[in-house]
Amino acid sequence: MRYSLLKTLTCLLLAVCTGFCTSLGHAAGKPKIVIVATGGTIAGASISSVQSAAYKSAAVPVDRLIAALPEMANVAEVRGEQLFQVPSENFNAPRLLQLGKYISDLLRRDDVHGVVITHGVDTLEETAFFLNLTLRSGKPVVLVGAMRPTSALSADGAANLYNAVRVAANRESANKGVLVVMNDEIHSARDVSMRDAGKLETMQSLYGPLGLVTDENVYFYRQLARPHTLSSEFDIDTLVSLPRVDIVYSYGGVTPTAYDALAEAGTRAIIHAGTGNGSVPEQLISTLFSLRQQGIQIVRASRTGAGIVTRDGEQPDSRFDWLVAADLSPQKARILMQLALTRTNDTAALQDILWKY
Ligand code: ASP
Image 1 (tube, rainbow, N blue to C red):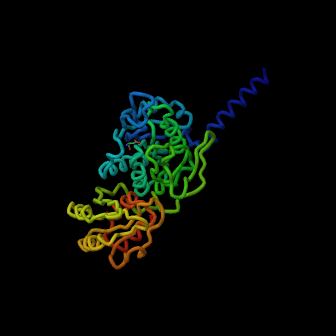
Image 2: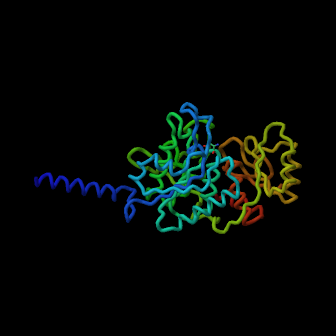
Image 3: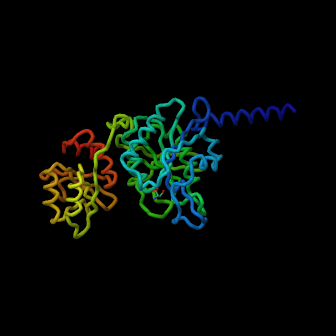
């Protein structure tokens, strides 16, 4: 009798300790995590379980996603808020600003320890980078998506969402910048890109993931070396609009038509997604030179998906007053230029920002 009482007490003590001593333990019990839903395939549904490509994205409300995952209650106190219900190709500057301000308000609250954002995969990397540069908080913010709709065989959304909540609830995730969790990996918002139109392992980082999520735990192995969130100069709370910045994809035989049309449409900067090291073919040089003279910033980036575009390498950038995107993809360079242009139009200062972040 006495032995079994002792055993019960020990078990109880162990259970309490596990609750508090795991990396999830926040002072007053389980961390409080808000899931902000914006749509995408993670909230998608099709009429058949064998359709994972033909389906309706952004269909399932966040409360249903949460109700289908009672396991989340073991790691956090979770509640959902439905901000948008859109496929992420429909994200634009007003939505980015609205989302950023919404998240910033949540992060200021004492009863919010971390935020998970469900998002379509198409432009997830852009939203994540934007938030990484503008949210002034060290609390964990994790973006998550899915490659298969909720109704598909082997749908990945539930496991991704569960893991995202675990990462957001983990103290080690604080002060690491905005994170992206998919396919058991933790990526930095700065480096991650969608690299495959169909595979579950689509989210890849230039320099590898920051960490991994296993059944047992959340493991970090690296940190982002570039400034983010609290060490960034950009602040979502003071932003009211974002300037127009466009991208033109280059190829052999590209003509000036698209560049001229964008200038006509009032763009502030053009990201030239150049071949190789951001090369500019001879038939474009005079156009880009004269657009710069008209005040439009020209940023040479690479369409290859990796590597550093070297300044004054393929082109005399200093002489032409052009910029290089460093190792940023054209779409990431676009987000950074939108932010940078809210602060300066000076080419040297803009180039410093492109190197720095
Ligand atoms: N096109 C969809 C979107 O980005 C794909 C997805 O949701 O994952 O929203």
